Amino acid sequence: MVTNLFKPKDSTDPGEELIRTSTIPLTIPGMLADARARFAGKVTYRQKIQGKWEQLSTQSAYEQAQDFAAGLVALGHEKGDRVAIICENGLPWVVGAFGNAIAGGVWVPLYVELGGEEVEELVKRSGAKIVIISAKKLERLESHLGSAEHVIVVGSDETKSGKPPGFLRHGRPSLIPFDQVASNATDDSRAEVAKRHVEPEDLATIIFTSGTTGGMKGVMLTHKNLMTNAESTRRKSQAEEKDRLLLVLPMHHAFPFTMFLTTTAAGVELTFENDLLRVRDRLEEVKPTLFIAVPALFEQMYRTILRRAELQGKMELFKRGLRVVDVAKRRIGVNLGRLVFREVHQLLGGQLRYAFSGGAALKPEVAQAFFRLGLPLLQGYGLTEAAPCVAAQDWNLRKFLFSNHYEEQVGTVGTAMEGVEVDLIDVPEKEIYVNLHGEGELVIRGPNVFAGYWQAPEETARAMAGEWLRTGDLARLDKAGNIYITGRSKYVIVLDSGEKVVPDELEERIGEMDIAEDVCVLPTQHRNKTQVGAIIYPNVEAMLARLADRGDEVKEATIRAAIQQELDELAKKIAPHKRVSDLMLSDRPLPKTALRDVARGLVAKPDSFDLERWKTSAPEEEAASSDSEPDQESAATE
Image 1 (cartoon, rainbow, N blue to C red):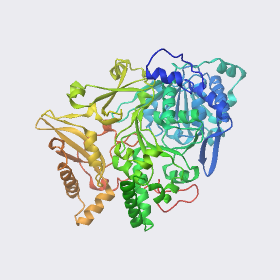
Image 2 (image 1 turned 90 degrees about the horizontal axis):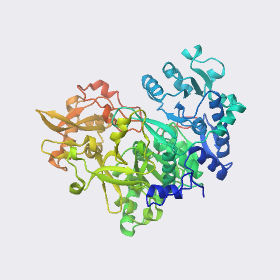
Image 3 (image 1 turned 45 degrees about the vertical axis):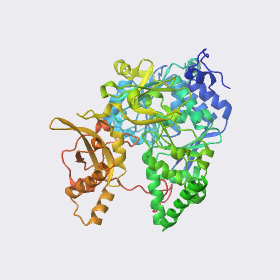
Image 4 (image 1 turned 180 degrees about the horizontal axis):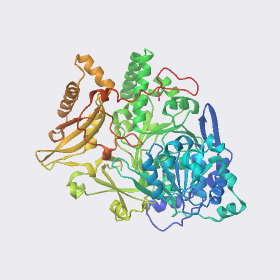
């Protein structure tokens, strides 16, 4: 048992109880030192690059992070300095993040696909003196890094040869290869690192997030925020030393970053993979026991499983297997999916305990589809301001195999994490009252709640209701404490009749149509009356197939008619006030967040529909690949 840096209080507060009983120190450097002592030479981090495995043990990660911290200090890094990183997941991320934490710095992870002006703004806003960037991103972003004092380049052959690109050749900021930072360390800088003490309340990271609402806000998370959330995540996930996790989510998000900390603390072997086309290869090689992803990837995985069965001429056999599973579950209450679909399980490595979906709402039918295959797919909920995990479904193998527990709870995001309290409050401006409607805005309290928004005290005040964090999400709670997210309070459409429409609910129903790829439901005005509108980007492949089957000409009118027909069918199944009255077609995919959900705040109402642009707008079909030769056959998980 690790002694905490916080003294327990005489309180029944669940957050204090979590801190008192935590097995994880409440700072990142303390956690890493503890992991090093417990797991010593175990290989903890792995990544395959150009066909060759690279790896780090916990011991090596600790030593390299110490050296990197001393190198940063030699460059002038002070405690509290911000270090921005614009780099794909990998071993440099591990060393850089831990090294910066040991030096007492603040980590500022930025999405690698941000535009140059966005990067420039966020580097300036955060006041980052040092930027760590991958060589492949440097050429595109080099002219936007001028406010930094030093640029550390990961994987750059040019910098090693002394030929930095662009303006960096001419003075500030200085350009340094990542693997040379440690060599700058001096006896004095090492001594300075040894003197720097990081406290639980110290700021650990600033994560700039726009989510689905637009606008970039810097969420400030302390070491205590992150490490208490890592502890509650470890307990909820039951992660332990024998586990293996394949991580494909980019760590500029709080969820994968916290999972990275959680797995380090628990001694889990963590494999990074940035190329979704190689996920199948990694699953078969790594044989993970845990896998986390966003709903869009799980949907793609299931579509590819079906396509694989069809390509192999096994679709009838696949459907027969599903019937066998359904009959067995109904008659004897046993899930035979793992036995019936052994081949599918082998494609996923064959040792997966469960998969976990986060970042957006998981469609119930996707979860049910995985259950029938004998693959547990659990769901959770969180937000960056909560470091980020708020709730998750508990895992119980016996309940999955021998009951309908998970089938009956499809749609819930589970119960609150240990140490986290949740409650519902009224939303008077939307005429939503908990005692009348059984739902309200979800609020949370606990040691994971953020320290505020960077340089935005007014925004911080608006995000809080006393000591409770307002999530902006509508929810209801059942008697067992399960949370059901029902929509965003900000985007509830209040009609002139006083009736309310939750966009998320309609978007989910419309999204079930194979001819609707992206959907955004929003209020529109007609003759000074509020009505329900929907912007829909039609799925190119499915729509062309639908029109061909009907013998219809491909034009805007026939596309609109096909979608309207589906909407009319949906209207028969829902309350009249929820029906879509204003259909708008988009000829290009709707803007997405990095987690692939529609960025509602960035969606603009289309003023026209260009047929030719729509035909060429579909993203290229993802195909499986390997580290050597491309595989022509679609794989189970792309």
